[in-house]
Length: 120
Image 1 (cartoon, rainbow, N blue to C red):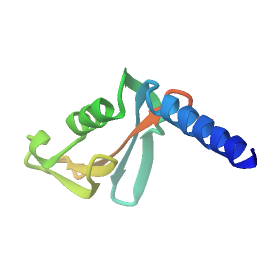
Image 2: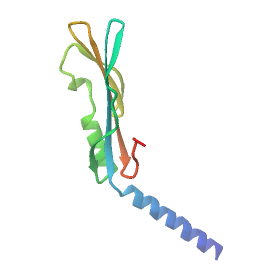
Image 3: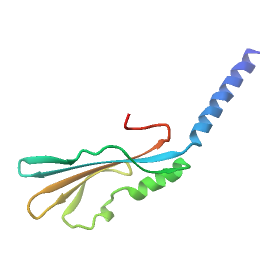
Image 4: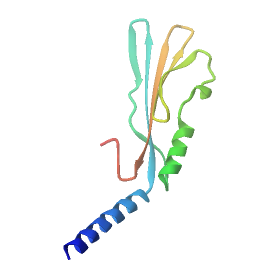
């Protein structure tokens, strides 16, 4: 009898976990933009998490995450370079202006279940 109850609990927990995986997935983005020139450094946009879009499956969310990620091929300006890149999650790009100003753009993308809000 105890084994039957334990089995029912395990199956119930498995079903809850499966239902959770079938929920919507949200693609979140955060961009942080700053500039520096000489010894001066200023924040242009401190960036907060914003919703890019939602998807019915995790796989579709990851596909969109890869498509929205800044890559070297997306940078057409020859004065730009990628400083750091952790594919499909985090990247930092620097844009060098002719006047000596460097603009740093940091982009983060995350696919999270609809019940998870990274702003909290």
